[in-house]
Image 1 (cartoon, each protein chain N blue to C red):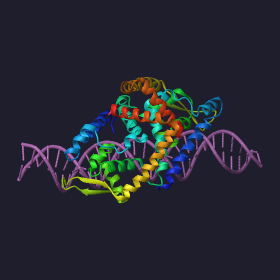
Image 2: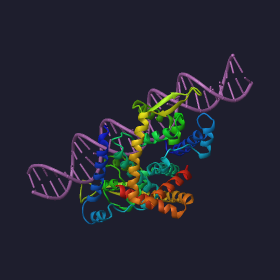
Image 3: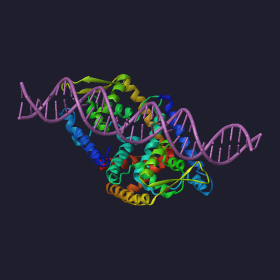
Image 4: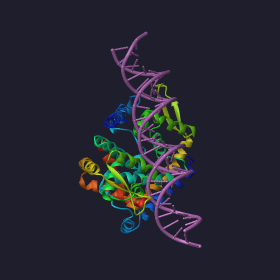
Length: 181
Length: 181
DNA sequence: ACTTGAAAGTTATTCATGATAACCTTTGAC
DNA sequence: GTCAAAGGTTATCATGAATAACTTTCAAGT
């Protein structure tokens, strides 16, 4: 799939979903209720932590895709660049594991970053099995731009929730993540 | 993949990730730091809303899989049952759209629920294009058990975060979801 | 009544992701 | 020196999300 089309697709998708939700099934009283509520009775799902977090996470993901379309970076790629930048010279396994990416799947991810001249594998002479991973200059500068895009997303979230609530959401998510792991 | 194996796999997966994280790359000073911090510098990812929410959501997902293994229900299936129960007689499109599931993909999902005798499609005579979807008695009773399992997960979250924080997390996630849609 | 555009459901298909198994090389411990 | 284990890789599979295209039915307009 081409990259530029991604943003358009996400937006389109959202519009369709909303359209369907607003239109409702076959008219009548229920459709009105749905229109007011924006969608109908979730039957308990609205107080299910996993469900609401998933929906929120999906929404963030969609927003991310749009913002990072011109940088041609997916969430996992951005996270990888961040982690390499913060831990230059680490080997693939360590970085992949820290991101929760299985080693076999991390290979292609890194291949692509390397192909685009953003990251580099160097044979470690301390342990010639492992590859020390670093960012190239191009990788560094793309990461700078990516960080700006990310800051913009964070700002958007700040506008929706307020700064205090945003920090709270991060803290709670982190606690839950650690607590469940 | 067989169902009973799922829980085991998730757990196993987690152990491996932790093992790698704790073991660290090639010993030495870095490994110690990693052991103390449980993992190394995330380079800003720890204050990135999308990243921490994704990790938290993944953790919840894994916990869900384990809890629902004996019921043989995946998150999307559970959500679908909940939604049908709360809105009996709705057509597929409406239910799918409310869950953010594309209509083509909802077909197989419903097929499976129907095959297992949990849900039913009935031709609507008001609009013979659409299928009114309802739960069977078996679907109702499975949903009861599923709700108990879900309540247990919510309880677990309550133990990790506290009830106030849990409700806060739900409220913030919902606000963000709505705000970004 | 007749035509036509759109909605509901379906099928087939593609693509990205996550996960497993198996393999090679290198290391470190015995 | 041998051997178990780690790091990296390949191949492969299952799953989920997405698009296109088709059929039937409806509803609106003429």
